[in-house]
Image: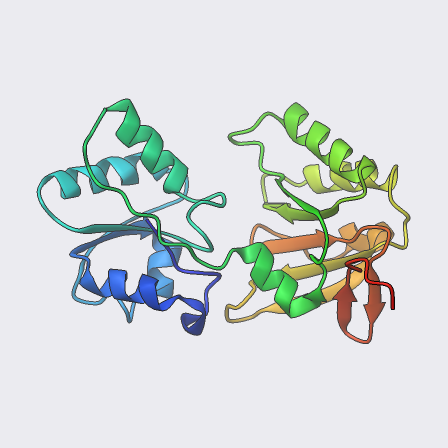
Length: 238
């Protein structure tokens, strides 16, 4: 399991590069395969579309059982909304003795935070708004609790062409607990071609362009804006 980071070639760890170069078979979502095409050329590639995660893991297991060294790639970190958990679930379900190694990568939340400045300097909650695998009622409760507890909140998968109401609902929940002037950072395609950054406020958040490749970071009660930086106070007495 290899995390290839948020997208930029120079943000892939040396260990991940070494493993990718030594592997015989590379398995992954087609978009992520395209991001590392120059690194994995001349390898056997197994690529597929979204929502084919189980099938990809099954094919990877078959390759590994045939004696090949296989890399399943995830963007960001494979243990953060990535493929690591699914691989281990399926290997354990079948009680297989295949060795599995997890190679970490820079998560999208951290890549977006670095672009914004230092918004994750204190406790934060990471929540995906995709209800494809998690019931919306659970997501809604998590948003409610994180907002009430004054966490910085990082939103993954905030909106898609088929899921356009969840972000509005989320904003309304958060506004019940946070000030409308709370700083919000919106980063689209962090570390990829076409990266864009918007710093706004909670009451204006949903009027900004948002899609599935967007990370949203909503500050806590200490977060402030300085020039083009979003900063959450750690608590030092200056």
